[in-house]
Length: 157
Image (tube, rainbow, N blue to C red; front, top):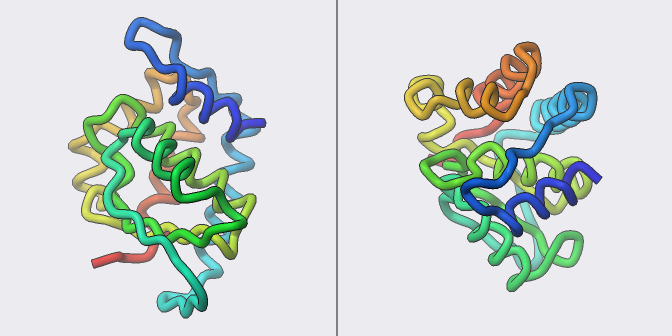
């Protein structure tokens, strides 16, 4: 349901519209689950069969949804995302959270790598904490998002 709510927010976005409310318990559960999955993944992943490699998202949630819709959703497709989930798009947090939901739902079909925008300095300069606070995300969740992104993701470069 959480992934569906994020998908609908991105799909129906308009600038004056309300920001999604992210329930603390659901968000923390997602972050801990995806953190555990990322921690257990090896640094080098061998994939067989057809794989779709996706470049930077830069917070453009509508582009992410369009690409997933056109290419096909997991589990029919395997995806490797090369990082740079944040950026100046309208849905940087929502794009990352949607990918994290998909990672939890399809752990062997979604692979999330770290781009240069997931480095601590970039996260700070892009104002990830501010994005989280503006979407009414509690402090403990903000810290867990940063930790999951900075520690759990493997480098794509």
